[in-house]
Length: 358
Image 1 (cartoon, one colour):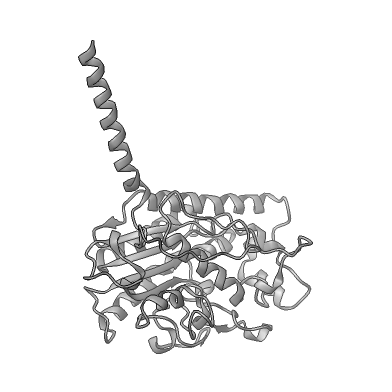
Image 2 (spheres, rainbow, N blue to C red; image 1 turned 90 degrees about the vertical axis):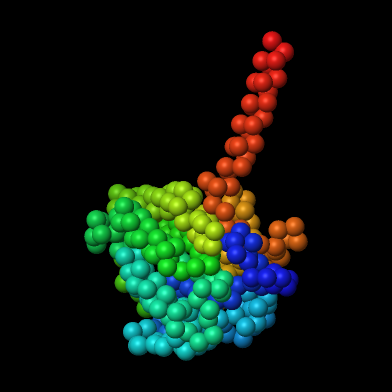
């Protein structure tokens, strides 16, 4: 795929090769806590260079990340994360790239990440803030569910949507020529099954106590499952509204993780090779599946986007089709409008025909 003959002016006609900048927002899943380690000692390390949405280590042949896939089309892509960082230690953009995710952040913190991103974009050498097309991937909200039982008001679905709306409004108002992937959050209950008798797995209780500690079939667990579904439902409703769509900007919900089950071995047990020593975060093996699923969703229209059933089945990457080589950016409300208009036109013609015959 080659870039468009001239820089696209419409968000609906952006090819992968037209994207000049890649960035990411989120929490420890995007900072890639422990992703390239094998023991509990690796948990404080953020392996950003292999993070599913923005890792820039090597090439696509070394590790499959969204950034490394985009680099196949534009080797000069700005933003991929080059190295690992250490949780809690100050970092620079030379270490993180445009991975602005912060381990432990909730949705209420994501606007701070966006402000950091905007300021960095405006001052970064070689980045044309007004002209360059940017892809920003955002996965946030799972820590809200992990913390829900600690403060049911602060981490309520209402507040989740409030802070998401605030964050997306900020990007739409202040960042030109941008496509934002909002990745739908996981159903988190199956993570309770990721267990083994180790010190590392005890960290689950620290990372996500509201999910891990309730008894099976308890009212507390059932409430959390319902809150998880409500987060998903409300997020889909918000983005499908078309509020975040204009000529040079679009927010797209990528739903591939919505119903994903954890990977299992043939005997039905959880495949722990996908998980870090803390039994909560993904290793590189999991990050690669996240990257492939996201890429595929980007080149599938609303209503036809694949949803992963289980991580046990490797995702097969698709190539952007020749008949539509562009990233799909039109939200559901706008996608359905032409079809409705066509339907109404047909009805009008039919009524006129009947009237004339009568």
